Amino acid sequence: MGAAVTDAMGRQAPARLLGIHVDLLVAAIGIRDQLPAESGQERAAHDALNLFTMDGFGYFQEQTTRPQAIGYSLLDSPIGLAARMFDHDTDSYYKISRALVDGEPVGGLSRDTIVDNVTPYWLTGTGASSARWYWEFGRFLAATAAAGQAPPPVTVPVGFTTFPGEIWPAPRSWAETVYPGLAYFNEADRGGHFAAWEEPETFAVKLRAAFRPLRDS
Picture 1 (cartoon, rainbow, N blue to C red):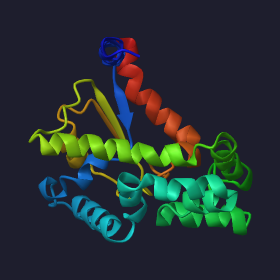
Picture 2: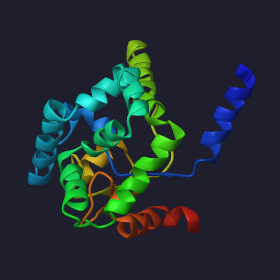
Picture 3: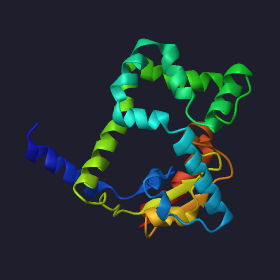
């Protein structure tokens, strides 16, 4: 496909984007020294983020720098694929373990839905390509940093929902630091990193609330 065509498609996609909803503040990793740490909630978020970068960041770093190293093994063994997906963060790990080992579903996390989630990756052979997304994102950030530029700001309305079991539940002040002019913010009373999977009804309610002003405008 020619460069002119791809450039045109790239321009059309943002033009049609009316808003986004986010529930993990990924940008916090790179600017954690700039994020508020005054309230108890802000300090707790810093503690959780620091713990992640010290003890839970391995998969993120590997997939950002060497995705193929893990990618081929994810295509070779369904057990290896499942283990990689399940051992993601402490909250999700224990919830998935309860569902699989003890037969005690946690929200939408049951034995059946867990297997349903893993199966498409295996049948379509997309374990490696899902890991490469991290590499592509990392290359984009590295290129902007090398050029002495900041990533382009988000110019559409942003809705943010923080879930209590997230890897680092971001307070409103953090979301506003990353997304100035934040259009919507809410705190869910349950749910974790896989919120849409774990608590689909709660997630859907928050998503609708975030986009309702855009739909009605």
